Length: 182
Image (cartoon, rainbow, N blue to C red):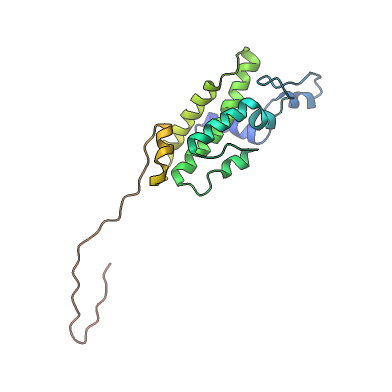
């Protein structure tokens, strides 16, 4: 994960990002409204997990990994990859962190630049974070991971098969003990 992504992800996970809810807590009076969906007050939980825009992004990400898209928070999202291969787990973490950060970046584009909601903005960012996670992972994939890897346009990492060495065994001579040498 890139350091800039990690820093923003930390702020989002620790509820330190400057949302309208945070500004209101500091005494500034404003009518808080999610700038993306315009349906509820803006806070981190709504922005990342409850907003219809975010839910659509998470459903897209989950479908590419062949997981169900019902995520309520960061912990439930991370837990989706339990039991997966190490490589898929690393890619999933990259997608979850990248998804959170991309939704925050997207919120800022809508809020500060007046852009319209655009899921492709988030999808491109998430894809880049999945690729970073794939290439930085030391984990291996399994055969049944191939559809997921193809969906992201990456190749798996296979473990090398153990090498078979030819050997011959002979009975020990009488009154001798055979000891295996390593």
